[in-house]
Amino acid sequence: MNGFLLIISAPSGAGKTTICREFLAVHPEVQYAISTTTRSPREGEVNGKDYFFVSRDEFDKMIEEDAFLEYARVYNEFYGTSREFVLSCLRSGRHVLIDVDIEGASQIRSLIAETVSVYILPPSLDELEKRLLLRDKDSPDKIKLRLSRAQKEIAESIDYDYSIINEDVDTAVKQLGIIYEAEKLRVAYHQSHIARLTGAE
Amino acid sequence: MNGFLLIISAPSGAGKTTICREFLAVHPEVQYAISTTTRSPREGEVNGKDYFFVSRDEFDKMIEEDAFLEYARVYNEFYGTSREFVLSCLRSGRHVLIDVDIEGASQIRSLIAETVSVYILPPSLDELEKRLLLRDKDSPDKIKLRLSRAQKEIAESIDYDYSIINEDVDTAVKQLGIIYEAEKLRVAYHQSHIARLTGAE
Image 1 (spheres, rainbow over the protein chains, first blue to last red):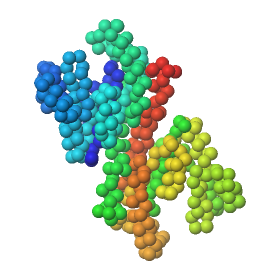
Image 2: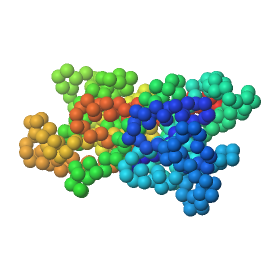
Image 3: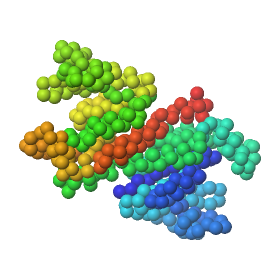
Image 4: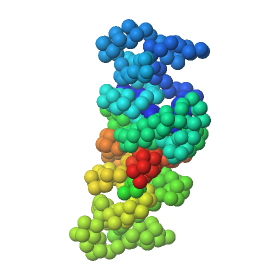
């Protein structure tokens, strides 16, 4: 592998989507791991850019063929990460960013060695609640459920390599950039330079 | 431990001393691991700042008491890193930078878990030779010896976490800063925040 897979997870409301979008805007050389899904495209969504849209039959066939690094059912629709899409990017030397939940991250880590995982934390539970309320799409009961689920998930985030406290988006994006730049300095990525210096190449 | 130990090594002539000095100037919060030595102070050197100057007897006693993380003999003088000095800094939450050779680095890694090691590489062997010649203190034969020793050492640098190619000092110092900032984002350093969020604290 010449590239690594940057895995980003966060509890709902922690700001993961915005951070990923802004990070990718600053680092266009990083490939976003486009999900494959059975759900219908929404207004403005482009096949092969936002998602790979497939039928339920096609998705089932991909599961059978072990074509996913991870997949999950959300309500009545399926979402998965194509193994071939990610691996071919990594082989060609591109770094890949994937936005995935804690279970998906754990599955991916067991399949790919070259991962760097980052868990986005809210600055406080109060702030997380505030952000969920601002979205204004969930009932108070549902928000309570989301908060207790978030707490459970956060407790499991110790399996990640790094964490970023999303106090403000700009700082969080900058910190994600620092992690990305540091990981590119890993000894593993200097092997050909070392081989040249030692005459092994 | 609340701090980590940033281990910097490089072949002679790769620019390690300059990079460390400039990094420490930008990051005064990082403690430099002052060596203990039996050699006499040179003009302008201050005890407790540049080195801890001790007698040969005192050094031998420290060896007996297992007071060094690592020590080495260079010609007729001894140099060592005080275990207590480094550990007390790390315990108090300070990050520590140590400039040490490849054998010393390996000894330290076996004793302290919280290390981050960086190997400084020259851009090419020709450039390394040029830098050694510019120093103008070694004979051509000695430079040849240094170069072949450098090649052997570089081949062993795969045990380090990161490497930096010292093309120019400013970039190298910036890259060392990126590694340092990224390491501060390790999940291990967010444990108390995670405990607060999950109600474990």
